[in-house]
Length: 312
Image 1 (cartoon, rainbow, N blue to C red):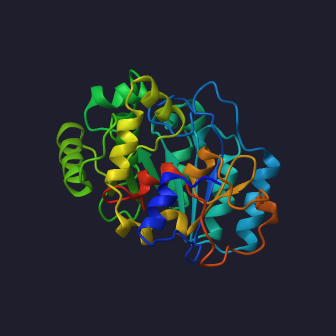
Image 2 (image 1 turned 90 degrees about the horizontal axis):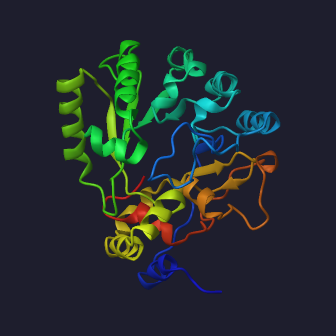
């Protein structure tokens, strides 16, 4: 069996990627999305119809009832497009101390999402919102025309009900990704710039900002290939491999379930088709957490999480 370049890098440096104590359940509810972002590792979008079926939603809830998770993280696609999302939030929130719901912001402007912000507030859910760049033109080059103003409107609405406001206890975190085939700028200076610009220009506040490298999978990989940037980008990621990022990688403490109910070690492995175990374990079969020390399947996309400051 041919080893990936990432596996060879680990072996060459005497390193392994193995599980720690599992504390987070991440739930990918499907690929349906109101946007078709250029940097999406899943190729989610308006033409995708994959959504978690009701019986799988129930299996996820049943798993959270029999196994305790410190954090449950709902993602997509656009989670807002799952009809059962309100029920999922209501039933998962009492089962964990930290419920996260991810959003691209524009999906919260859809008519069917009108009640979601208040629902999130009532359950003290953490909101993690994608905002690729602080520049409107740069952001819309990834997400589409008109998405910037809609995103600003939604952020103001979230601030209006307390999210991201000092002392509210309602956490609103932003995630920014580079617009092209390069690594993100430093997280601390980028957060300062976002905080200053959003406050000055739009009166918007937020809790924290995280910067991540784009993962060369899905639509972003297609763009890299079409633009002739794939080899350059992969080389750039590999050259910036940082072994110090391994202990904090999210895959060491997270188990991810896709819309069909199958288990993976992270959402990027969902996109890469690298299952948590060789026999495609289903969430309904999960009766105990993976043991610490269990090997984690890896591929060359893992360079994205270990380049520079990493993806934790």
